[in-house]
Amino acid sequence: MAGWQQMIAVGNVGRDPNFKYTQGGIPVCDFSLAVTRRFGGKDGGERQEKTTWIRVTCWRGLAETANNYVRKGSQLMVVGTVDVSSYMDKSGQPQASLELTADTFQLLGSRDGGQGQDQGNRGGYNDFAPPPDDVGDIPF
Image 1 (tube, one colour):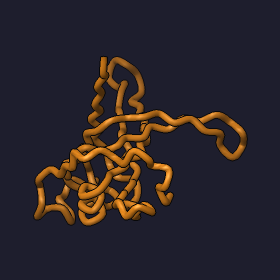
Image 2: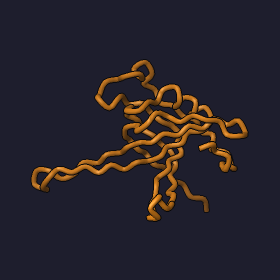
Image 3: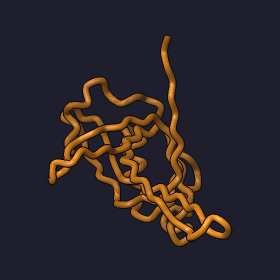
């Protein structure tokens, strides 16, 4: 039986997109997305924030669109599939990261609430072609 998953993340882009081509000529673009959750306050005590960083990867036409429109600070909704990767950091401590392969994204505005560079294009972008089977040649 086949499974299915989907993740929706809304947050602010942490850095400008990194756009490349694989050795096979397939466009790929990645950027980080900060998803901040606020909790507490009033009766619950001091108001707190927790930010989760998600690495987002776009492929093919969606990668080209992300490279053209996504900028650091933009608020974005991304829909796709998620993977968790583990690794050892420089000090030898185990770490984990969330990696979201985007199927679609929607520009929502900029961090300051203005429309910024994306005011002329409020539509969503999607590219339902899956990433290549052999992603070992990703150049980053």
